Length: 179
Image (cartoon, rainbow, N blue to C red; front, side, top):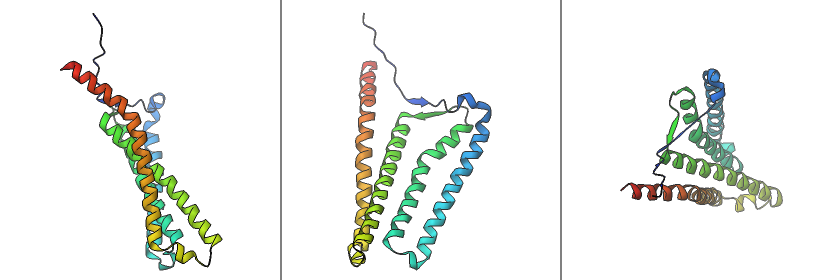
């Protein structure tokens, strides 16, 4: 008789800072303050760029998009971490983990591609100062942001599918064995 593993993974258990169990409330306060500081600074950057007409140029447009991206990027991970610092049961479902992984990779890669776009913007401004406003019009800026997001989506989709596919195949095979 052959033994078959019939375990179905439905959730993951976080160990978090298990060696620092007594400090988890302090860590919660520290991380919460850092998170709120990050949100506040990025909100100030965005609102300043939106409200000041002198800052409505491509460089500041990209900076506002980068700040918005950072807000979303930290929103994917930090709230779950804060909840788990105080929770007794620190788990995440398989689907929740996959969604969080995809979102984190998408926003992180898009963030990196946006930094490359900002570098390209500065290159055009320095090498072609007289044609800068023609080359970096509103349509071009929107296209570069869309391209950065599309590249981030593609990278995240590939990496997530490569990491999740073996687990899904395992889940499907164990589910069919149970039926």
